[in-house]
Structures are given as structure tokens and as C-alpha cells.
Image (cartoon, rainbow, N blue to C red; front, side, top):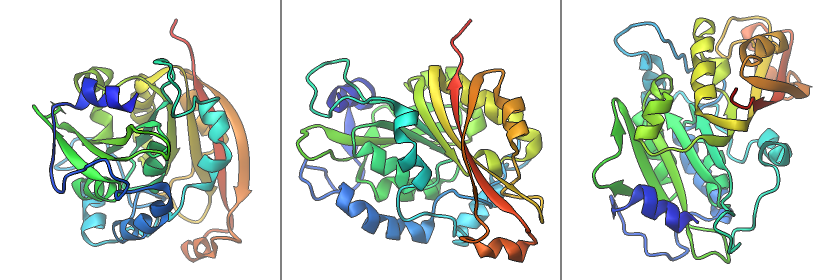
Length: 307
């Protein structure tokens, strides 16, 4: 399936650095944790640091560019996010085996908005999921793709306005001859309209994981963020959303209460709370920012059918 995906969307392709020869010397699941240590130096999106504004300005991503340039990116997890692991079945539902002969046996299309260099993307791509991240900082996309495998070029380049689609490949799952493919859209997430996604050859997504995206968006831009996300999801597509609730400081990460989630998402999604966890004991540094409470909440959002 991934070979067909490369043929349909990514070819003709040329390696941009070292050639990928199909051996298992590139990233594999056992190497994911080691590779994440390299990514930690350039860390991925997490709580704080990213403010995404729809208001006019010289560069709405300026603060995030500055954070990456100064390596102030301490929010990276060096392993798969525990909530993504815990709720994988809820997010994806039953998935076909990687070696299924059926042409309809493709695993889910998965979107990671404001993805940074999170190891979650590689972990799913290596299992055969069709993963696309969206990230506005070139250095973050560089780190994401470099730690995954070999970046390849599309001829002609896949570009829509200020958005650029980049791709890397690596050996796939054990027992599979198909390569693993990881794609990333470099550019402003709020510019990724359905027409822009079509121009880049992107599908509507069956699933999405938002940890560190909505909570980093300025409150006045949340509606624009939700509208962009909703426009990219397939009917009945699911989003695993992770939010935080706290006192002590404004943000980021900004507090997003359950009432806010329902108000923002209910017009386009069914909202199901999954869990709520007090993080003050595990993350006492929030007290340094004046918090007396800091909770992490998870929700499963299901896109309404059209019409």
C-alpha cells in the first residue's frame, strides 16, 4: 500500500542526502528511542512556546522560530505519548495487518497539527500508518525527517502557496517489503485549507492527534484553528485531543476547559471525555509558575457526517 502511495503521490523521487536502499539500516522501532534523543536537542512541540496568531504581522511564527534557534525546546517526550498509546484503539479502531493482500487494507491517514519533531509520528509511520505532520518551523521539519530516514524530493516540488510538502522514507515493519513513509507540510497550519490540502495531494484524515497544539494557540485564534482542523478531517474521522486546566498564569499552555472544548468542537464533532489527571505531583515545576492546580484532560472527538 505504501509503495502505491509513493507511486501515486511522491514519485518521481530523488534522495536529498544519502541513498535509501531498502536495507534496515534506517530508523526502526527499536531505534526510535535512540533517535528521539537526537531529536530532543531540537525537541518537538509540547506545552508552551508556540503562539499561533491569525492576526496580521511580520511573522506569526516568529516566537516559535526564536525558540528553536535558541534551543529553548524542553517539552519533547523521548517516547510515544502515553495517552496516544493508551487510546490508540479508540482513535484508530481495528487496523489491517501490514501484510494484508487487500488493496483496501490501508491503515489510517493520521494528521499531527503543529507537530514539531515528535517521535509519535515516526512510531506510527513505522507501523504502516500514513502519517502527515504540519509544522511552521523549517528546523523542526528538518529534525523530524532526518531522525526518521532519508528525505526524498518530489519532481516537481509539491507546493501550495507558502506550504511545502516534504517526505522521508525508511524501512517498514518487520515482515513488510513496503517502505515506511513520513510526510510533513512545512508552513502555517492555518493556511492548510481543504483546497490547499487537495493541491498538495493530501487525503481527508481518518485520525488526528493534538497534544500541544490547541493549548498553544492564542485564545482569540482557537476558532480558526478548529475550523482548519475540521476541514481536514474525513466524515467520522477521530481526533485525540489533549488539553490542560490550570491557574497561576495565562499561557501558553493556555487553559482549555471542558466547556471550552464543547463550545469549540460541538458544531463539527461529537465530544467524548476520556480522562482527567492531576499532574502537579508528576510535574512540580508548574508550582514555579504559580499554579496550585494543573490537570491534563483527554477527549475523543468524532467528526460529524456531512449534511
